[in-house]
Length: 103
Image (tube, one colour):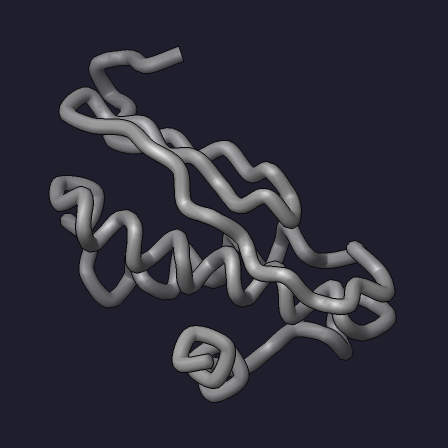
């Protein structure tokens, strides 16, 4: 699936985390263990979490350490979303994600 125009490819694995692939490196970032109630919106939260990090640093895909940190953030956002019911009410803000990352 890697083409000349593709900089990074992400694969989500639910509670198991996510994988990343670039032309230079690839790997896996573990997920978070939470008491899941409803998975609705978890993928959207993951994408939003990763994109929020990419918006802050558009070239992060070139640095594996930065990719891993962004995916950890995205995995946390997705995990938090599963702890409530419904996609929109369960979406975390940055403070909620930071709390999970710090614990």
